[in-house]
Length: 340
Image (cartoon, rainbow, N blue to C red; front, side):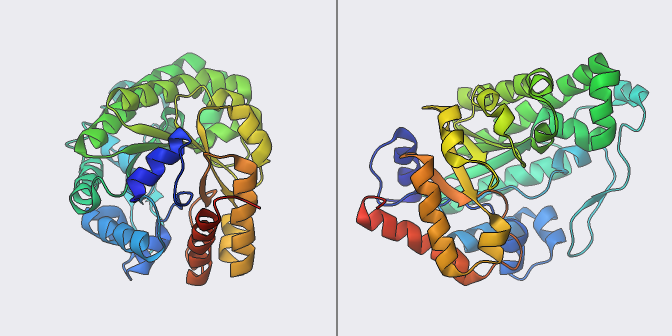
């Protein structure tokens, strides 16, 4: 059973040889092949090499093009700098004044330097493992992209002070993100992840007004193209989980600080739960036996279709033996055919 078969059967609730492993790796992946982060962010060939290397080394059931939140913002025109081996920095919000929105020009995903690089990454991965391992593309949620363009604190004030203006900005963002998602599916992506992390910082009512409708539009476009959707919102999303279930995502990531059993109840039969192993205290700082116990514990709570993963990115410096313990625990669970 290859990874694509394993994931698709798991999503349907059919029998699999073991639960899938969906760990997200970015900084770890770049350093695993001894490349600086700037090359991982700016050269799709490095990103592909890194993802294929960690997929093989740690028995992952996914390869991914997730890297940083600034691909779309850079192609909108934001000034982003890339230190040689550190995280990218946005020097100044592109929309420092509300009037700048009228001058904002939506980028074409196939023409923007950084967005087209991600399309190239998808094509590269499709050539290498297409049909065998699911390929995950990535876009920012409209609210997250608005925060990238405007600044987080300023945008949160905008939602109260100028909600109609905020909706105009979100409309521009969702059109770009939808086009970017479609382009990645056409390039060969099987899954499109949507990162909308700022959504955990707003109230449920604000989420329903300023995040959910735009997530729904992106996932509808993904579904129309025949791909799957994965929603990732960092932080404790317990209070918005029932609304997240209406996003149209097929997979929803659940953070480590949340009750996985309650999350599964809130989501119901669809979408599938993914997570929620603590990436720091367990994966980075724990021992292999702690990792194995966390894998078993999460799968017991998450239900028969759950996908195993740390709840967010695998931290740089995570011991290899912990990642191998994660893979080994999944193999042992598969061999036993049950969680005792």
